Image 1 (cartoon, rainbow, N blue to C red):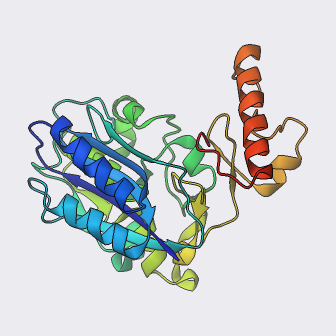
Image 2 (cartoon, rainbow, N blue to C red):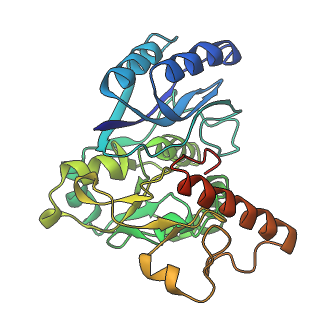
Length: 300
């Protein structure tokens, strides 16, 4: 049994590049795989590995400057959901493109999963899903507003164009694990919205804490690893991923005429030119050959 740990923490790293080498080396030595992002504003990522390895990496992160209060969410899996370990340097640990946004200064009111249903049922509360359109497409909360954004960086422009819809409304926002709401709630507060709330721990914490028969969530929650999506109890939902466009698929979508494994799905059939599709086909051929040899294909 392997442990999957999803984490983020906002803190000030003076020189994130100096933290990269030792963190990457420890992960590899401990058999931990996944992706971690380092930026001047903090750390974000999801990793998987044996219990002892995850504990060692989390202890290392908690010892970094300002990270003693690190929180994370865990799930279990029988198979490794990542092909390799990546530690990357970024400008932001979640890209919003708003240099004045600083979750360390202030954020919205945290709402525990057990209290979320009561809040979003109130008539003066507007519930906004801050995730991307392909994530919303496979699951969301009852009555949640979908901004139809393709990236989180589009959210400020969407708010500017739609803010008049929410006059005299309290705003409740949610995302996968909470990190996007740290920024979006700070942004809305800076825009003069007086009452802003967000789901503590995100959808993942809600699906872990709230029983299915009491839940207002429907569908799957997209996760950025080979599990693709999880439902109540953080159990995989059976969704698949198009390895061309990285969007989630229902199993039935693989029987559509547009689908070609590793090359295209009905959502991206018109998005790539012939040379790029040729590269996808060659990649898929290498994946198939590796599987026949009983080897993992790291590029996937």
